[in-house]
Image 1: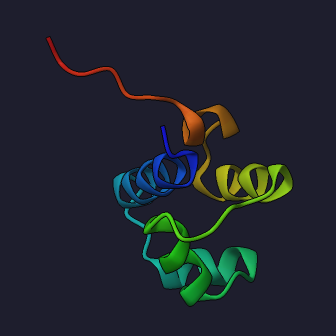
Image 2: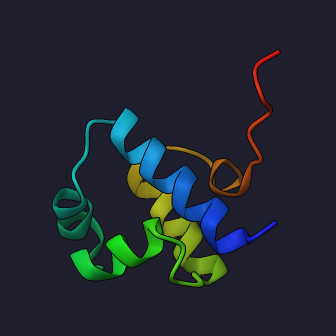
Length: 73
């Protein structure tokens, strides 16, 4: 399991579910839009602190960013 890709997919999905753009998250946290784009594409390796800050901005638990989604049965 590529954890960078997992975090990126989860972050993108949760961000979109909250109706936020990358630019809006950029204003909330100060991370560049390029960083957020790279994160969503699995090109960044965020620190634990970054995971926590991203989760806080989305109003979710940091665990939600590393959770493996179960396939629908």
